Length: 569
Image 1 (spheres, one colour):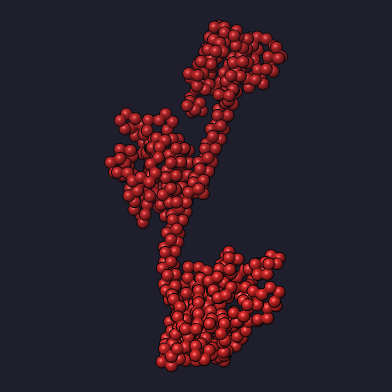
Image 2 (image 1 turned 90 degrees about the vertical axis):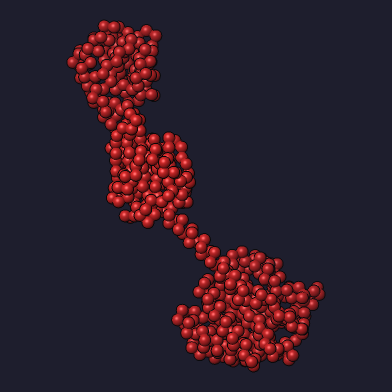
């Protein structure tokens, strides 16, 4: 019980002389609630039973336990109490000991002057009231800070929506010593079926309570809940139930004029009911709780949207993968290999291998600018138009196919600030003639893999094989409405490989040590670095082995990686 709320302060007088006790009692009984004790031990027993005193007046010289010793035993438990020492002696050491050990407010000698003693005690009473007021203010401030910190901790530590609701109801119910506390979430202006409960020091997380349970716990709060749901204002109700006083407080949790939840707190049969400042503090905490709930709901929505997007992208990845050739054609005297690995779930790289009814083998690798879904959509369109062009009765020329592709796609590409780089090659297995058209893509490579592996396998022999970069090239598709460029031609020999890659291969970060067993320096692979890798590829040429070497030194894939090869046996 707070002394600051009593009409009379409690004053204890301690003296081993009965006459002095009676005199002190008569002096102060009208202005104070006076308790008498005949010794230090007796006074400690009374304090244990009655609790804190506003003022203690104690004689110094008492048998068994003197005043200094007695008062020192009260300091730790009752720090706010004002202590006054009476003595008939002027022992300086006693005076210093009493002030230092017993935290004495005044030291008065016997016999005392009644008016002077009254003035000292009145001053002590005023000091106690001021001290108690400041102590209570500090305690409330610390309590407010502690609760606010608790709510903020809940915000930081629990972004899960349901976990957040349970944390809020438990922390508020516990700190404010509620008999029980119930949180009703609000969705679209209506109460949800879920409720979150704190009751007498326990919590029931993730529990939906039956209406019967809530009625018995919440003292039939339905009308007040509905009122708060409509008004968005705090409702307070006090009364008696079964002979026990109760307080019922219904608080809306609102953020940016949006009602997120309703908090119902109940106190019944307590000796320390909520004061107005407690209710004000609860309302302040509710604002922080509303912010926490808002953030938790936003986090939950983002998580759900992210999961949905990931699921949709997985489907899109599968669809895009199915657009590419799942198996390579088996053509006598040739080996065709291809692989495409998107940097994200979907990407803009693509390849195509098509065997024309006349026997020509069509090969292409392309790259739509940008990444993700927009690039993937243009990739799908490019493959669709390309297959239509290649399916003509007569096998067309590569540069003509490029022109038709640009004509079909340029309007959409230009309108969306996109372009496509690609190489399209036509190989005739009979004549071994390869014609190609290049729309701003990386140069294709041709080299004799059989010869280079032979040279590498002989110790001390110089490697004389050099790759042939096919450098006839035009602008990317989608730059201009009309695409024009010459076609390139090459005749391939037995043991030679024709290689197409996207820039995700040549721009992959690589270490020179892995290529030349030299000093470790990270740089882009580029076509020269790719050639150094190719020189040490085993025979027969295995595209998956090459790609694995590239990816093993490229821990973070920054771009789609596509590679295609045609080897003449």
